[in-house]
Image (cartoon, rainbow, N blue to C red; front, side, top):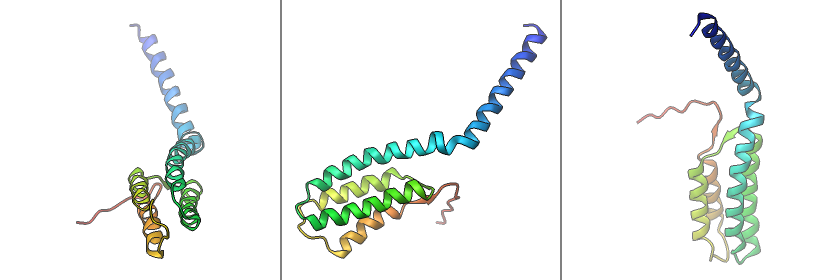
Length: 130
């Protein structure tokens, strides 16, 4: 390979890397992060709503839907990251509460805590002390 070719390849790759870095840094939230969040929440929304539709009581449905909608708004608008484990645990808890005719305030608090306990502000550093 001629030295001129090597310099051209190095220059072009540097410019492409800089352009990619600039786009990801400045447009990453709009083009990557928000669409991925909405896609994950849309799939989880379908699962949660299918579990809620089996509930017999209208009050139970409304309570669970209000907790779920609050979670979705918080994640999409406030810059929190989505934790799949909390959503999976939430759906398991919903599945176990499916036959219940009335939810106690404790049940609703448990459902809310399951979702909101694992939220982390994006860009924050987690320190685990054992």
